[in-house]
Amino acid sequence: MRCLLDKVVARYTLTGLLKLAEGATVTREELFSLDLFARAESISLRLYIAPSSARVLQRLVELPRYSTIVCRFQDCVGVVFPTRYYKRWTRRLRDCGFGREDAAVLALATFGTSEESTILGMHFVATYDQPLINNWTVQEEGLRARLETMQRDIPVPYCDSSLPQVLRPEQIVL
Image (tube, rainbow, N blue to C red; front, side, top):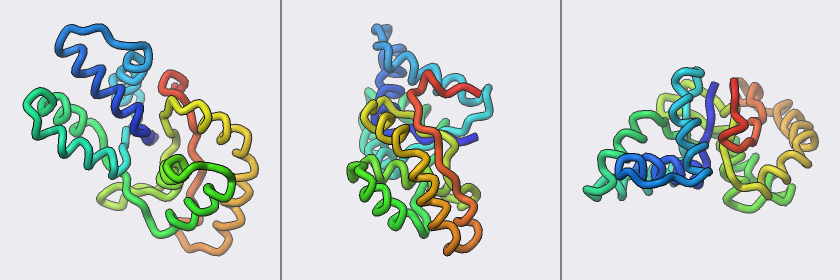
């Protein structure tokens, strides 16, 4: 199973790890993000981040205060990259009322792959963006139909892509 952490969940995980290392109190969102991060290995859930999040981490790893935490985080997550039909799916999601950033995350979760190109898509998107979750929930069946229509005209393996579940970190249970 695979899960794409949106930038906010990735940030909460990192700030939570930093606060724990410094003995500070974590927020509720940080706690749930840390819980998902900690449980991932034991529940066979591979965590991924978007390339934009990976670029931010590359800048943070150079700062002494963050380097150890960022390295630990990077060791536990992969980066997912857009594939051939990512842009087309992003446009269709935008046509359904998703903002540019939300559409990009959702398209990456549908048509994204690892650096080694050994996977296609995610099973989950972990987010705290309630408007995104609401819009996804309302439109999921229509999006599924749009994806199925699109899949008729695209080759393997892309025709086998599927929609992820869009959930808060604490809702992801296997």
